[in-house]
Amino acid sequence: MEQFTKFVGMDVHKATIAVSVAERGGEVRYLGEIANTAEAITKLVRQLKKGEAELSFCYEAGPCGYGLHRQLTELGWDCQVVAPSLIPKKAGDRVKTDRRDSEMLARLHRAGELTAVWVPDDAQEGLRDLTRAREDMKHLQRQAKQRLSAFLLRYGKCYTGKSNWTQAHFRWLETVKFAQLTQQIVFQEYIDTVLALTKRVAGLDDQLALAAGESVFWPMIEALMALRGVNLLTAVTIVAEIGDLRRFASAPQLMAYLGLVPSEHSSGASKSRGGITKTGNSHLRRVLVEAAWTYRHPARKTAVLQRRAERTPEAVQEIAWAAQKRLCGRYKHMEAKGKLKVQACTAVARELAGFIWAVGQAMPQPAVNQ
Image (cartoon, rainbow, N blue to C red; front, side, top):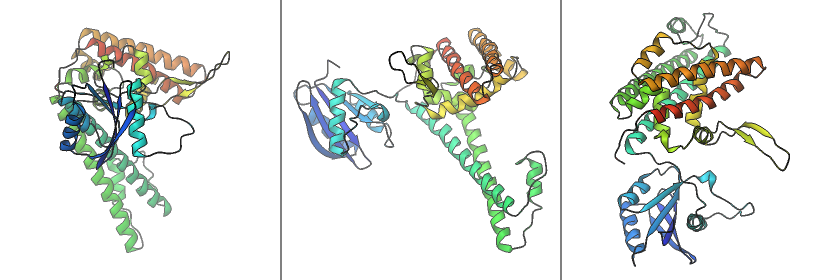
């Protein structure tokens, strides 16, 4: 940070940006609001760089995305997108305005007290949007199924087969009749909604497979799929949400980033640990916990896993088999101690993150254009 002479804090909104500047050794100055457009940003940079000043910008991560970061870096300036939850704040400060936020960002940026988030490149952001869209659509599908099930339950119409949402279940739904015409219409609308969302989820799954196969990240995705419980969707989510696994110096750093490490409140001789912190990337934490459930069963190289592993380097195959032996034994040991299944699977997910980190170190990272 020593090479910079001006630290620019920006409070970014949909239409406007509040701008403040903290000069090295000087006061924090509020410059006012500018329009949130590329032209206004370019004009701001020209004004600030007068006198051969070295500029460093920062703004909070939020719904406006990374367009501002990409524009400033293309202009040749340093820009950090900071994590809002890690910004130091005074407990008694109850006044919040755009001006105060921009001044605070500039001051903390100059002091080096802000934590920057990882900014994905265009290719990784595209994959991430695809996986998150699929997750959103799956959530809507579950809601639609719950509403249909609740509607049937209100009128005592319960399916007696083995599993819901199978072909046999849908055939049974075709035979259900209601006394009132309006009820029959509502019932049919619920069914059509479920079918439409199911079709959309399937379409996104097909697009995900196509995009992953054509991506420069395919070797890494294929390597991650050698791990038990990591299917195509999970592997693409890992690559899209994390990016370069080698940006973490150690496996514990990755575990902490995912919020899978125990929380702690210790003071003096007293040490107290609680549940996992649940900080960081919730999308990735969810898919890892889901993958961890497959390690409840004994370690075994199934035909599917063996075919996946054969397409990966020898080092990755060794890591995948070591992960099976370690994690299956870990789950069995915790179950014998009387731990709840959800607790055991969460602990397995934490260690699975460590093996994912090891796979990332064993594979070369593709070169992509930012």
